[in-house]
Image (cartoon, rainbow, N blue to C red):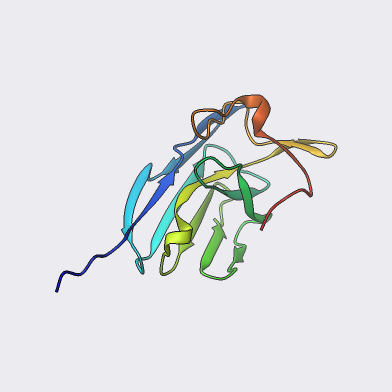
Length: 145
């Protein structure tokens, strides 16, 4: 009997942004998973950050806020996701336990630069072929789940 195993594709937007001399790198750039496998992606900054935010974007969709980490050492575990803000304040990781087809998409981390109720993820953020710096603006509080 032929067993067909669906393959889950997770695309981590390779983010390398420079804001005020700060550089944020995300690895790996791309990963293929089978359903049920675990996966971890990492973000590293060249300087200490005040927060890390994790987002997910499905093909053709807008970025959806997943979670905010505001202090070094903080860990959040909603459902099958685990996000950690490194003790040094310069790194974060996002772990997916037992990946499912609904987890497919682009995952990316950012440190927001906010002014009033408007937060810009990064002036150099490119997520998908149609995104421009003006479309990377998100209203604070208008976050998805």
